[in-house]
Length: 392
Image (cartoon, rainbow, N blue to C red; front, side):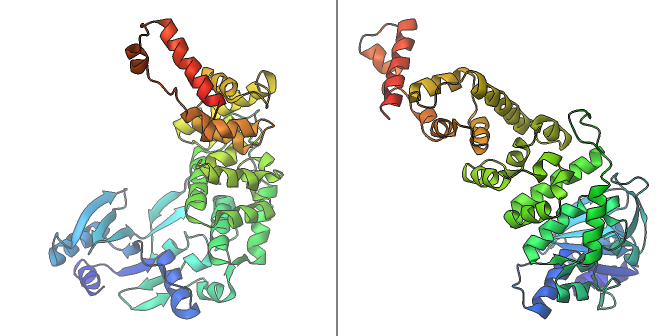
C-alpha cells in the first residue's frame, strides 16, 4: 500500500480509493465477524491519470513486481498484477442513462460520482488511501449492520434491470433482505416492464446491451452463488419474468435445475430449456452457439418423442438406434431428461450407459476370424452391438 500511495503522490493523483466488494467484505469481516474469503482482486478508483500512475508505479517497483500490464478503454483503465495480486486502476467517472436499460454514457468524474454508479449502498463504500479513511456517502455501513440491500437512487432498477439479478445474488450469498423502498422499486419496474419478449417479438426486441448483461449476471449467479436461494428470491419477487414470463409459474424449475447439475449441463441452458419458446430466449440472451445447437436439437427430439418415438418398454438396442439415427448429442438428450418427459428413463439410460456400449468385437477381429470387408461386416458389428446392448 505504501508503494501505491507514494506512486500516486509522485504522479499527481488527487485521490486513490479502494472500491468494490473487497471493501464490503473487509468491513463484514472486521466489524461483523464474517469469515474472510481472501482477496481475489483489488479495484482502485483514481482521481487523476491512471496511466501515469501505472508508469510511476513501474518505475518505483520494477517490472518484477508490476506485471501483466494491460490498458483498456478511452478513460485509461489499467489492469495489472502487483506482487502477484490482480489490480484494476480505473479513472473516476460518472454515468448517464439516456435510455433505460441501454449502456450508459460515461464521462470523467469524481470519486463521489463514481461511487454513485454502484448498485447498492453496501457496495458504494471506498477506502481513501491518500486520506487513510473510509468513504461512506450512502450509509453502506448501516446496510451491513441491518443486513439490508438498499438501492442508491430511485431510478436504479429502471436504468439497469439486471440489478434485480444482482440483488438476488447478494441476498443469497450474504443472507441479506431488501429494504422496503428497494422491494417497491423492483416490483414497480417489473410491473411496468416495457418489452414484450414473446414469439411475436424479434430477438432484438430487447436492447442488446441489456440482454448481454442479463446473461452475464445469470452466469455469475449459477457459477458463483448459492443459486437455489437466489432463484427462489427471483421467483418470490416475480422477477423471473425479466427472462421469460413462462418461468415465473414454472413449478418444475428447481427440479430441472437439480437434474442439470447432476448431469453436468450448464444451469443457464437448463433454465432456458423449460420456457415456452427456448430458442427465442436463447438467441435473445446470446447464449454460445454450441449451446443453442444443443437446445435446437432438444426441441426437435422433444417433438419426436410426441410423434414417433419407441415405446418406453422397447429394448436398449431399439432406443439406441432410434436416437443415434437422429444424430442425438449427449447434451441434447441430457437437457431433454431434465424436462422429465414420459420417456425420461430410457433417455437417461442411453445418456449414462447405452451410448457407450460397443460391439464386443472390432472390425479387425472379425476380419482376422474370416469375415470379408463389405456391408455384411458392418451388419455383423451392428448385430453384436445390439446383442450387447440388450444384455446390458
